[in-house]
Length: 229
Image (cartoon, rainbow, N blue to C red):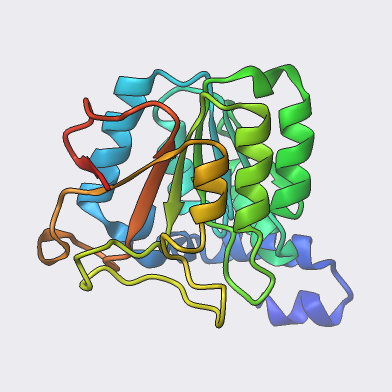
């Protein structure tokens, strides 16, 4: 039975996504593996978990659950959200047997606001922000919510420009919406955040070679795979 046939029978997009997972689980190997298939990014994130000892990991932009499944291996509570109903259905089905992962269908801003109002918001927590993919860019609001309520958190932003290394790709959605240091300058100044970038040259990275930045109020000098700007 194809996925297209259930669509014609009026199944919800979430159900279609779940069927896709059951019929084509290989779709879950998106982007060549977790964190865009980037080996050094994965090592950097693992080092962050070890050095910062977060209570939980929060991801925005579950997509098909590839990175989420990898995050679950740290044996911490993992909270993740996906706004696209079909992708949510796929990742929900994929991760339903992973007890430390909670998958929520929601806009990332609403998801974070609700999460940070709970006792969870007391931190410290480690965030991986990857819900940016169209003209409605939630990133600035995500940062306001996180650091406004959990200032001791650490935030990793995917698809971000790495100054001095143009080999790292980053997202640009038009005027005022490029993921660069300028875009986050206001929130970084308001919350006194340090911006940290990969020490690994883009030429040595694997996978999609997307850039990232790591934001925190505390200095992360003990993380060998990061440099402070």
